[in-house]
Image (cartoon, rainbow, N blue to C red; front, side, top):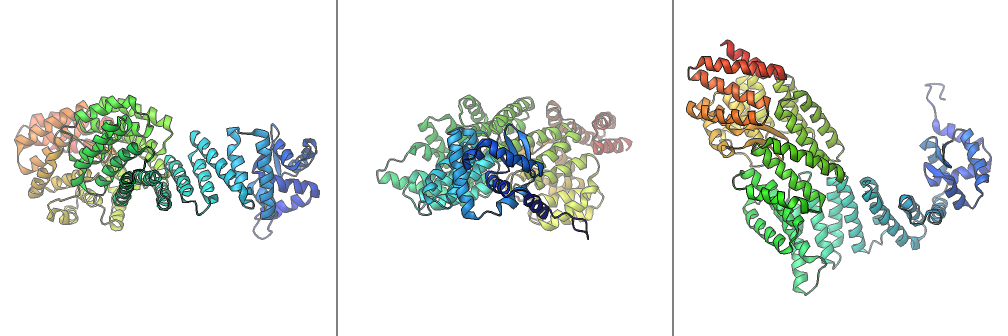
Length: 634
């Protein structure tokens, strides 16, 4: 112990305990330190050639010295990682490598091909290969087999690490092997939710594969890069470039008369990936032809998986942003294909698109059944990515219903899941959810410092300017709210048609309606009319704002088109009630009461407001309750 500050020097304490033991016991401890933090008696005996009873004498003395714990069944564990690292540090790297070789031989003799011992066998073999290059092929083979076993047991991080070790042992001139190992590593990283990391690993695979004449390998590397890169939302430009290069490789192989293994399937997958990359890189003028091409290849191949992937990409990345008219037949086909799909990821995509369609079209009972199906399939797949998507669907449902407590709890859960996905930023979605939750709790003013900070650090973030404007207008600062929106108003609300378009439009509509800006409301109504007949949904199902007709009705009220306002709000009220949304149903009622009051029908307006105040109060929707009471008193 340090007498000055009372701290304990653990390393010195460990050294003193070790030094108090006989030299033979110390040597035994050094040897077992190479085995790992926990080890088995018979492995030590086989690796050292010593009798088990003789070894037990040494190990029991170490237990008495509090350097080891006897954990039962002939297994021992170092009491602290520092004990092991201190002992191992006394061995030269050459001696450690030779001990790893002995241990690998012992494990192989004792357990053979037992998959439960493959990871430790592979590890010790790979460490031994540091001094014996002849062991490298054996080490690589064992690492790959261990990685496959770990992957099948859903230990994706371990599988990725084992593949990375194998890649590190490969001959630097063997580009084909390095590329294949990088693909195996990237697949494990992606399944473990590390899609940004996986994209980089697949990028390495692409680079290595270029040094080979293996067309299938080059195409596979490009396909894997695209599949990993779209999930965290990377722009599709790089993926598109790689996919076009891969298509050329496949074409040239065909021109040379080469038979590429699984060529038709690779070409169909290339068509699907290219369709998605075109959509995600802004080449929307090309997606129609790309869709028809991909669909034709899927039909020729006769693969339910590829056909479902084509439909899912086209619906999820293209058509849901254009509208839902005419999509029913595609969704019906997806439902027909669902029981025929072998690939769990493709099946989850298909279900996800059906969930989004059900949300957009207001089929909430069907949506809830599909979310339950998604949950079952996700749990079987152990995919962290789809666990994150599933949680977001559940959070969306809670907010739509108006259950603010559950919504906040699920928002926190989604943020925690995002934190478990390396380089996945869940803060933006969490911030938006909390902004809307606090608004309905009538606590929006508490968000002002955060929104201002976000806007100052992300000035190009389209969502936070209208969010701040809405906050300002609802807290009484109408002049600053108008200033915040001046630029987007001057541009007649020309916004990118992306995943956040409808959400930004909702916030703009809310702000401009409260500002009473008639000309702005006319512009917004003409742009938002495309949403008629659908529920307003953020991205792939992060939030649902209820029926679009409510917002069109609000705009019509400000413009002075009372007939349209009443008709639109009637549609919204019926749809929001049918969907089971206490929040949006009463929001529609509130605005209907304002239309009725504008038409001089005060008693009808007051009756509606009484319902809003009662239902909002029971549900904890403080903002709606306050507004209903205030409007009623008028």
